[in-house]
Amino acid sequence: DEGFASEGDYEYCFFSTKGSGQFKPVETAHPHIGELDQIETVEEVKVEFMIQEYERTKAEDCINVLHPYETPVYDFIPLTKTVKRGLGMIGQLPEQTTLKSLAMTIKKQLDIPSVRFTGNPDTVISKAAIIGGSGIGYEKFAHQKGADVFITGDIKHHDALDAETEGYNLIDINHYSEYVMKEGLKSLLKEWISND
Image (cartoon, rainbow, N blue to C red):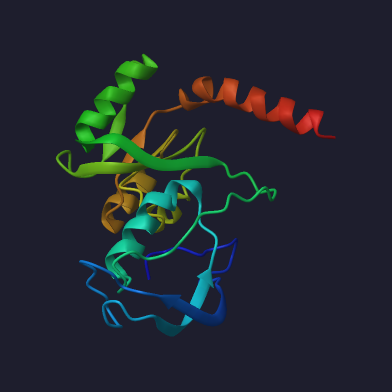
């Protein structure tokens, strides 16, 4: 229910195996099951699923809070599979801010004459999504992925009104997103061309 284990158009993608776990609680342990100084064997289920790198901290927090063991056993194995590249990015901001403050920071950082936003100026923003160019139409997807704000360009008046009705926060940076995307696009093209 935390949104992990999604792969493409599929959700709840898990693989599980059953096995026997063994442990012996000692000294000041407070075992969920078993007795101090007694070897305990338990039938357990190992669950495997994929997450994105940015989800790792949230996954660790969920395991540590929800798992009944004092010290849950888990590991993260980086995969080298090829992933489809999306049109944009989503991620946590270094620190929380308000919608208005983020809009003004973007204006200053991009050195652009104006920036428009839709939503309550005092809304707290901690996770943002961005698509360069005119990315309107992806705001719902960004919201579903946990973004507090969707940043894109060339947002039409009626699209902004629709987003406001749906409760989506938007920041419109007009066509200035293309300028900062040039270097990233250049790197991707070099990578793709060199792999052919």
